[in-house]
Length: 215
Image (cartoon, rainbow, N blue to C red; front, side, top):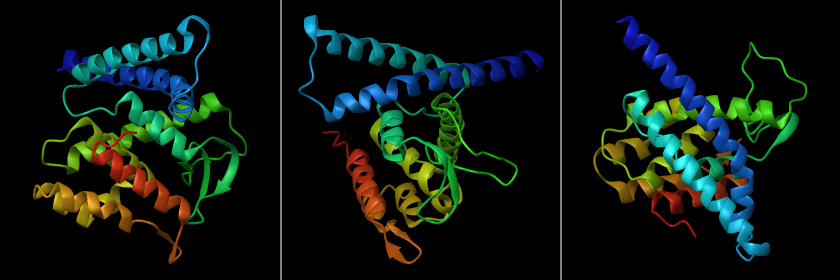
């Protein structure tokens, strides 16, 4: 029992370290996505892409195996979340009027922040992403593709595990109606009773990611 506990703890620590490494590459990869014509002498940009992708691909497979089950967000999925959240070093109010900081980290009642570094924000993001991963793995009862899982983690990261667990999206998904579940993304675009353009754009991107449209 003690050996199992220690191996589980070690796996989760390794997963957090790998997630942090992914977030370090995330900004670069997102920039590369929106700048497809970028190139440097001797193919430097392509080389960095390949190294980053190979490193995180192997790393997440290892972390997933040690973690003992459940899916993990991909490198591209992390970059997707980080890009939509954006980094803010000071406390701000999100679209629902809740105090937030870093990469969309909702400040808990027991937390106190004024400013934060990008490295500190990345650590918070890693923990929040792990929470969203766990929520999706626990709630979804049907097999998912990596793109579907990434889209759902992004959605849960933004709206919360509680809202997801009560959603029509989850009900349709667990009935095997993936098209109906995909159509539910664009219903979650309101804050304060009003359609928020940023939320509408993000939901559309998540729906496209869920459908496997990555370009």
